[in-house]
Amino acid sequence: MATFQRETSHQLKGHKKVIKNRVNPSVLFLLVTALASIAISNNAMSADTHGHKDEHTDEHKSEHKDEHGEEEGHIEITKVNAQKAGIINATAGTGQIKQTTTVYGKAVIDSSAISQVRARFPGLITKLTVNVGDNVTTGENIAQVESSDSLTRYNITAPISGVITKRHANPGDLTNQQPLLTVENYKQLWVQYKIFPSQRQAIHTGQQVTISSTAATTQSSIMHLMANKNQPFIIARVPLDNSKGSWAPGQLLTGSVVTHQVDVNLVIDNRAFQSVEGKNIIFVTNKGGYETRELTLGQTDGQFSQVISGLKAGEQYALINSYLLKADLGKAGAAHAH
Image 1 (spheres, rainbow, N blue to C red):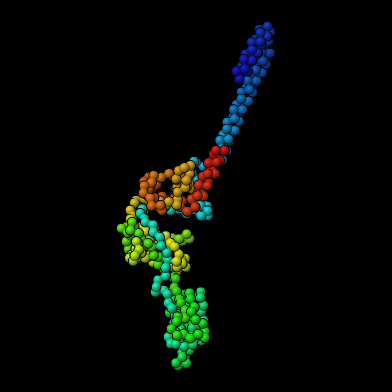
Image 2 (cartoon, rainbow, N blue to C red):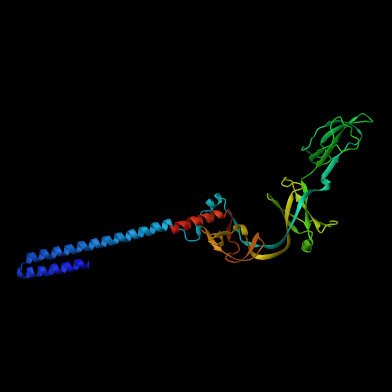
């Protein structure tokens, strides 16, 4: 523009000389009109170029915003899509921080759940309808014996429900006094944990116990504490419901005994934490999806942690499958870096 003004000024000076030598009003009018038209056209081109630049800049900004529209630490996802992905939320609230002691033992059968089936009267076994591994119910006919005295036949029924674990006789054998079958019921087991002297002061009847194996976990409580002769430990007996068949006699099991617990105003389930850039964060729900939060924590028992700050009671956070949100957060970060 400055160059154009210098050239125009130079041209005007030259034309002034011509005009001074030739004083012709018609020529003077045409010259002024032409110069004015050139100036207007040049200004218009400059304005158009500037406007195009602004438009391109705005468009680039818009595209950049669309591409990286998510704010840092924010994952945009609808409730429906979160549910489809299997993300389950939990609500922050009051809870307990528990101190526990770990003990070890194994599952055993209660003596009342084992029965050896015998004949009432001596005789010949004429029928035996069950074998090892078969399940029987109380009162079910499982054998038939012909009495040696009266020669009459009578049925033998299962005294308890359970599984046949041993078969001691066969049809054609004489009964005498030996057992015919052994029936065991595994639906109710006991766990016998060893409690050593260093643990004895903290362990009491009635305390809650988390029973666990490599495949399953359940809750129960200590029912009995029994001395164990000539051994440096006592036995804690804990009932174990096995109605679903998840446990087996002789199975080695770990017990986590709750020895002390503290009520706190706000706790969070430790499963919600995800490690992002060296920090333990959680994903808290907001209007558009989830946002990351770093919390200040207090006491923890490995399962729950006390929240000092960073979260309020009633707020919801991603608990199950929160790693999916972490993955989306990583994708968003990579896009920003690009």
